[in-house]
Image 1 (cartoon, rainbow, N blue to C red):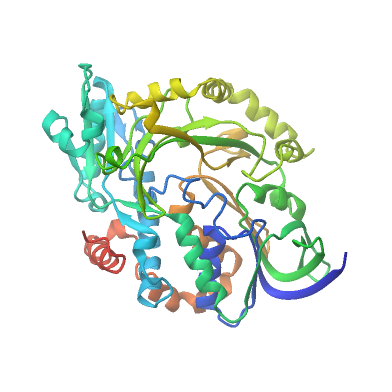
Image 2 (tube, rainbow, N blue to C red):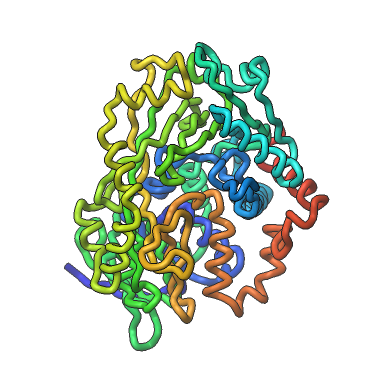
Length: 493
């Protein structure tokens, strides 16, 4: 095996939506920088970013009830507002890329689709009323409707209402301006555009074996290529955007910030209906409430998806467990992620999350017939033969010690870990992830390139007109940009 050593400005590990977004930003802001991308699989967007491995909801808190918890009788909207604001940045960035020709046809990755919240039972209906009242006062959620009228609900969600025999109260909110986002397709579009630029080189079937910092401050990345050769690449900045694979690579860096952090893998399953006649009876993404003890990413939802030019229905996700950190990972991933510095963090989490463990065991024991029974709570007339099980992506939930949660706190969300001098960054965690990739990568750049960000600001504002402002504080600007991005992204209908 030969050992070839070269140098570059930036190394991106993983060719998913995060690396594609960061690489696109950096080439716009610093076109003279050279970028190398190393991806373990043979194409971009095949793991966490793949369209079958995530919900594609375009998370903007329009329908996700876990973003608006009720505490002491009051529905809290802070997280919903934050997530919505972050998605607006994604819309603006994508619209800019359409206007400048980097994205030719936005309908290849984003489609308009109503977002709905649907609940059953008296207490849940009361909660939904409160949520609707709270969000109706916020212009980011303009256009939201509420109904518990049976005829209205039959128009909104006919597949869910047809054949419903129980007398359990049911209600829903609906907002027509939601989206379905094919993040796999978007990743491939961005990577294709990026790879055509000078100074960008992607290597696929390339397994990153080690990441270490040399005495001169440069990062040395050791990569095993498809033909078995080992190449060594140095760079001033390394971004670890390898999905579940990022934790192991972060640990290899040896930076203090990588200590006392663990990961717990959670896999998922979808029930998928490819019967076009049934799929055409449902148009929307309908989210409901999670079972007691279920993690936030297991909130049940019935989604219209546009994948490979075809309309499909997905229901789930059902939680599963695999010790792998990636669908294409190793069964030893969980074991090898446990180090002396995170052992007690992991053990503390295990002791605190017995409810989650019990929930996962229950989910693992479900057979297809039992999963169809869960589906029938949504779709009473669902037929076994019209639905098949598809394995969704692997997510690695971050476990770390926090002031608020104490030792071994399980984090639900997206985490960015950066070294003290900003020369290395890693992305960990899960939802809302891809939907907020633009905000997350802006945060990475702010932490890792603070000096450059000052000179980059005018260009960033060209790409993202609301950058540096809060849309929650500027209703006129929100409506102006929402209309402009809808036009650019062909979402007006």
